Amino acid sequence: MYMFLPFLLALAGSACVWSARAGLSYALWSATIVITVAWFFHHATDPLKLSF
Image (cartoon, rainbow, N blue to C red; front, top):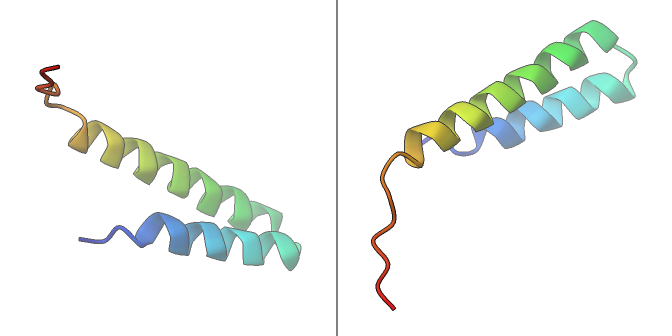
């Protein structure tokens, strides 16, 4: 639903790096990693049913 959120946070973090706001850029990059990992664990809970 909100799959654009990690990309938006990464863009905002990049803008903060470019404008030399170190504290805010670290916070945004950390939030990007946390959200990406949380969504991975949310969506990767079921085993794949593969048959070859």
